[in-house]
Each structure stands twice: as C-alpha cells, then as structure tokens.
Image (cartoon, rainbow, N blue to C red; front, side, top):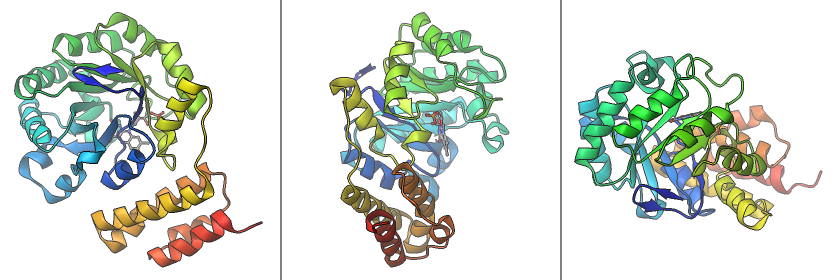
Length: 317
Ligand SMILES: Cc1cc2nc3c(=O)[nH]c(=O)nc-3n(C[C@H](O)[C@H](O)[C@H](O)COP(=O)(O)O)c2cc1C
C-alpha cells in the first residue's frame, strides 16, 4: 500500500478510537503486526496549548512507527500549527478528523460538522501541506446528512491531501444502519489519490471482502479491533496466505497483563485499571470466554485482574 511518500506492506489499518488507541494499545498492537497505527483524535487546540492530558495522547514511541496522528478542531490556522507540532513529535502522517458524530465535537463545528463546511477541510489541508513534509490525510464520512462524498472528497483531493479514508455512513447515521461500500467504491473510482475504506469490517473475512469490493488501497478496522489488537495482522495473513491463527490462551493472558501494565504506566495505577476494565471485557468476549461483567467492572488492582484472567482463560469448565 502506498500513502503519499509512505509504503506499508499491510493494507489493513488500525482505526483511531478515542479512549482506546492510546500508546499502551499501540504498543500491544505493534507486537502483532507492522501495519499503520493511528492515535486517537487529538485536540488541535490542546496540542497548541501544550495541555498535559492532550500531550499524553500524543505519545508515539519510535517502535510504533508508522503511526498517524489524528487532529480534531475547527480552525484551519490552528490545525496547521498543531500539524507542525505533531510532525515534530514523530507522526508519520497528519490526519484530519472530519467524521466524528459526537455532539461535543460537532457542536463547536469540528469532526463530522466539518462536512457542512468542506472548504474549511480544504483550507486546513492546504495550510498543513505547506508546513509539514509528512503526508496529510482526511478521515471523512459520506456527508453530514446525505451522501456528498464525491464532491467533498474531490475538494479534499484538489487541496492536496495525500489520501482519504471514507467511512460509508453519514454523520447523522451515527453507528446505525450499514456502511455503504458501494459509495466508497465510487469515491475510489473518482479519485486519483489513494482511499482507505472503512466501516463494518467485523472480522478477517469481511476486511478482505471490503478491500476487494471497494478496490481501495487499504481497509481501516475500528470496532472489531477492540480486544483484537492483532486483527490487522490476521486479516493481512488471510489476504496473503488464505489462512490466519488466533492468539493462544497464553498469548491472550500475557497480552492483557502487558496492556494493563502499560495503561497503568501511562495513566497511573488506579486510572490504568479503570481504563483497562472495558478492554478486559472486549478481549474475553472476542475470545469467546465466559466471565462475570460485574466482577470486571469492580476491578481495582492488577492482582485481582490476574486472578480473574487465570479463571476466565485457563480454568477448565
Ligand atoms: C469508541 C470509538 C471511538 C472512536 N474514536 C474515533 C476517533 O478518535 N477518531 C476517528 O476518526 N474515528 C473514531 N471512531 C470511528 C472509527 O475510527 C471508525 O471510523 C468507525 O468505528 C467505523 O469503523 P468500524 O465499523 O470498523 O468500527 C471511533 C469509534 C468508536 C467505536
């Protein structure tokens, strides 16, 4: 896959997900595959002001490379300043969030709301392209309430974006209904720059079909990677060899403990465990294991977590 100046073998990409794809998650994901990773959306304003919490989300150790840093904001000038900072922090790609449907983001005109003012997205791309040497991309939905993807993607391409990711839903749809892969295919066919297809690739087989159906350069995987940081690697294995293997019980156990340690290092002992609770339910559910959700949501320390995992993963029924 070629995205601007970057060449990456694996066409399956880890999606940005707020509260999930922090540095701890990325370290874990990197053990399973060499594909493109994304930070979660990072406030351009918070980055410009050096807000300490924002800075935590920008942590990109060298071994995470290639990693895209995603910016969210509504002011093209400030987004361009943030892009310069992001490049200096080690980002291999600067991505602009033009898809988030949450009202706290769209309210001030950021994320998905930018699809109502696509000239602002184009302006941001133009300014950022002047300032940084790494590829600049846009992650968009089909439109705000109707499909305007061809017009908007065309503007973004003309502004100089290196590639575009398209999630096949409108902002108004939130996560309801289905992602429209045919609409994504039309964007792929209309543009000269690469497109990443995104939406509803819930497993390896669906990821491979979305790649083939859309003719996209790559496929971005979101919700299905919760508890499956290995998914971009296993999907690539299915594409290239026709088969893939899931994590062994031992690997699952070690991965969850490492993820916990890393969350605790990043956010502190108590917050780290609290952040980890949701991951625990996702990992165990994805592995088809039985567990008591209440027990997971009352976890307060790593020792109790270890015991819970031993029971869920290794205890014979
Ligand atoms: C919990 C959660 C957080 C998300 N955070 C972001 C984000 O920070 N930036 C972004 O562009 N998309 C974000 N997304 C959207 C995903 O990147 C992706 O576009 C969407 O989930 C559709 O892909 P999927 O069907 O593979 O999940 C988020 C999605 C979820 C479920």
